[in-house]
Length: 182
Image 1 (cartoon, rainbow, N blue to C red):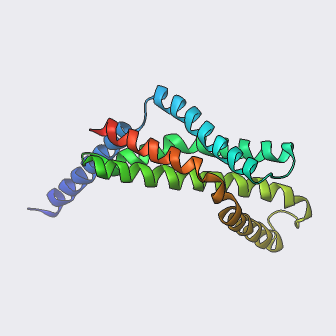
Image 2: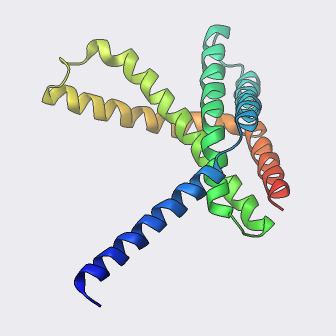
Image 3: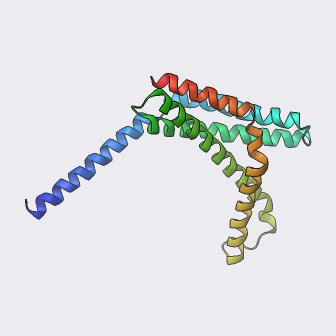
């Protein structure tokens, strides 16, 4: 085989891999109906879990409780379609146990990750008033470390708000995903 033929064959193989990857990605996307309904339900479940935990702790003022509940609801709503897609990509063509595990991990990671990101953005916007001028070296350090502190605070104080309600919802959603995958 000549070098030209080898290069053409390599390009064709790469192109076919890209086409297959694109097809798999499109197949993994939830339908619009599932994405909207799932986001609404998942967001409600995560907000309700936070509300229940804060209620048990007799936490702060109603305004602050409302802000935390909304943050958890928005994080859950944004995470559902992404987590569902990741679960479908990870479990495509596999057994129900794998589908359950993929959904459990994907929904948990995306929900916690996006909620933590939204918390960090809100935290950063609160402290931005006391930070240096944008795009200076001092500002960059303040930006990075404020974000890291926010993520740490969320890990310590925020994740516990997913228990017990969020964990039960996660188990139920993963079981439903595994059932649908059969």
